[in-house]
Length: 81
Image (tube, rainbow, N blue to C red; front, side):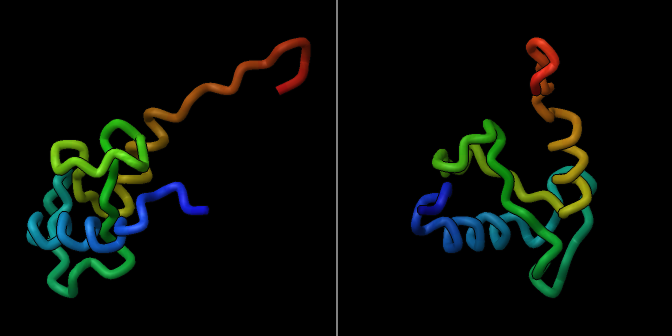
């Protein structure tokens, strides 16, 4: 079972096309349609929330940096993580 909606591929493709195959963070443009280098990101980190206002197109490098910045901390309870 996928964590994404069943029409996610189409939604992601439309978002990238509307964004002009450009990263919304650094502005890098991918005239080859960003194959493998552009990611449609859910701003609220909810993979089922496909509203246009919740989606942004990022290059894979900006997407990686964003997730590193907002990584949830791992808490340790009695030495067990």
